[in-house]
Length: 252
Ligand code: SAM
Image 1 (cartoon, rainbow, N blue to C red):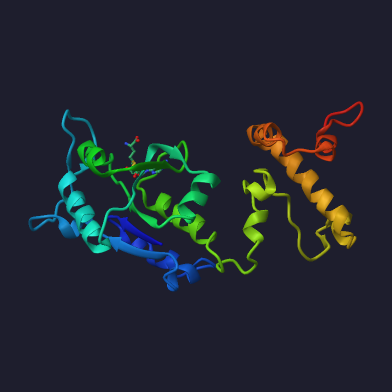
Image 2: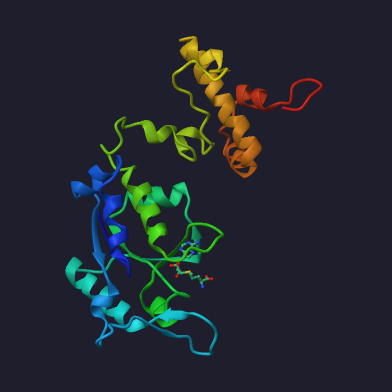
């Protein structure tokens, strides 16, 4: 798959693409990332890519023309059109299901805004998808693009050391969309805090039950919306419901 990133700050991407478990996906070209700077398409000595907003007000707006030239050059280079994703607070919040769809696709063009955003006419003409990282405002779309690239890369076959490990992560359908359970490693006693005994028992069924109970209780506490979805989809059995039931005479 191929991702073309349109950004005024291409230098932000190199350290990320060369680091961590996902670097294999980028180095091998399994996830082929290409960087495009709209400033290279701008005219004049100053290669200007932004201007003041019509109607007044503070802040600058990214001009349509340098971005349009960049996007046209990408289409020519790819030999055809691709989805064009704009990162914006007004987009669809990024969730596991969306990441899984992009991870199974052919890639996309990722458009990183800066300043107050992008001239709306460019958005209307070119953008096919809008994605938000959450209900807060970043200085630019680059961190959102990196978040999508990371999440997509780790779902590619052979990228994680243990092929099935992402199926044990929060939100995955294999986990019924629940949150992951707490994890522990050595030493067994750290500053007087002991690892839950069941994890030392070597009893696989009991460990699996404990993990499932923790997932259910954590999800009930932090993300009751996810628990309700799992329940509505018929993913909770009687043992699950028993784990969620308040103990007699008390709360969970
Ligand atoms: N004026 C815009 C607004 O209030 O919606 C915010 C512009 S922000 C300072 C600059 C750029 O950062 C945006 O064009 C967008 O590409 C990116 N950005 C900011 N917050 C984001 C978010 N929550 N999700 C995705 N991208 C975001």
